Length: 99
Image 1 (spheres, rainbow, N blue to C red):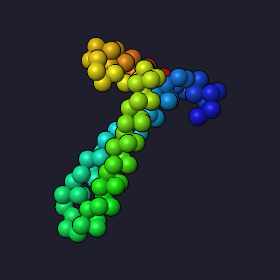
Image 2: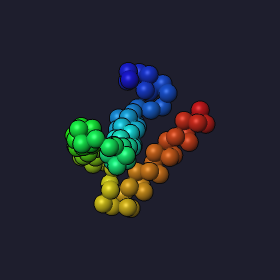
Image 3: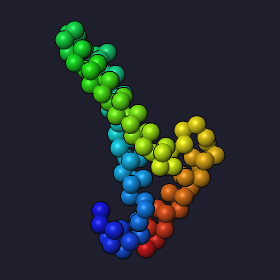
Image 4: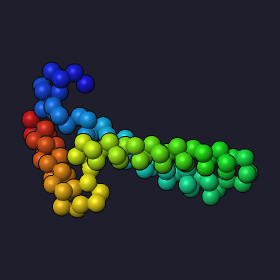
């Protein structure tokens, strides 16, 4: 998103975090869906293909998690820090809603 547009709508600096969070949530859902699909599949060939996709989805989840941790967007091992991030994001969202 263009920096001017980000500033106009009050989201400067937040878009990377929002996009990464959405991507992480989608990656988690993908991992879960592949795991369920594997348990519902009857053929060994399809199970193998789904396992390969599951492994790719897990690797993608790990890359997103590492990116978010490096940027300070995600603190899975420190509840207090994660709560502070979540409260800041919530306050920003409430501020946008009031504009």
